[in-house]
Length: 407
Image (cartoon, rainbow, N blue to C red; front, side):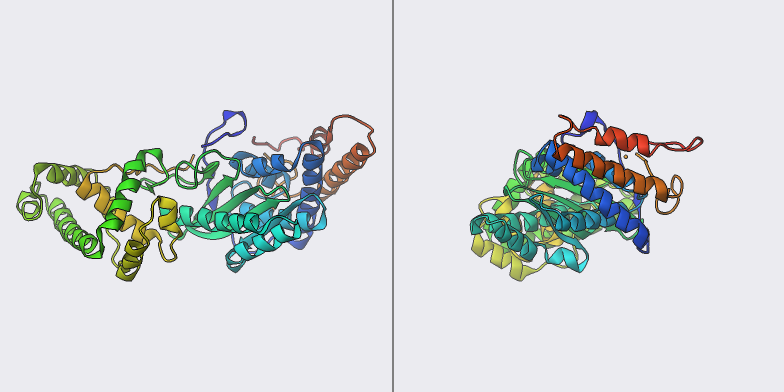
């Protein structure tokens, strides 16, 4: 799960909440966010901000400090918007690109503009824009957990580093899942790249970013290089055989040898599919082949001959269906292992928007902002060596008797 604070582990269920944050609340959220950012950059540095935002537990705590609900999908979208506005008002060497819905699609363009405003080399801006696209592509195509991305925010520093917070929604359950990335995380975009993922655990999720899926990724590259007709034949045969096998399983039959013998030359392939069939869940999600395959895209991939998985998913049009189909052929025909384990791995101060765990205390909220601002001003004139702003913040936002807190 990456390096969480204090080694804490857990999940955060974020149900979909409609509507907008009240203006009076959002104004205060943005003001307090501005103060917190100034404290962190002045006391530590910009990289610390990026690393904290990329920590799912710290980010969740921040949303609650800012007065939002601990269990709402809005904790991501509204908090990111508050941070974005706060960064625009300050000169901290930090800016945020992207946002919710259509704003997320503009992220690469905004990234290049921000990099240019910082005077960074054009190659750095282009690399950061590419990073934005790859991050979105990985969580959309390589982590297939039933959540469709609808929010993507990228924080950039004038030092050329970045962090990403993006969120997907499961339309069936109404719950959201949040993905955290940081440019300082060791490794690649493809293998174990996340700082953390918060959400509701699902029974089956194809995770091609797992170390355990390395053989499948290598095999998929070989399959793409074999040519379109070869891939098409494999997919069509596998699709028809799996449908028949699943039908027989539902009908109570435990034998599939007669159908498998028509296309396999050995017992190992049959054993692999028998074993895979035996592990099917109630709705057979793990082995469901995509209904439509873009064969023109397959031809394009063959022409490109990608040398690694990053090259593969960088090709325009490569999405969940293409990746899923290729990984299933790799796993069931060629015997590679794919991870089907879901990769998914909270603090109140001034109340929450919907009264969870209690209504926002506006006087306390305003006092909190005032205290943080006073601490920043004092630090700037050198009245103390170390900040005690957050300690004072906690004293200013004492929870009234009878109201519980959660850390």
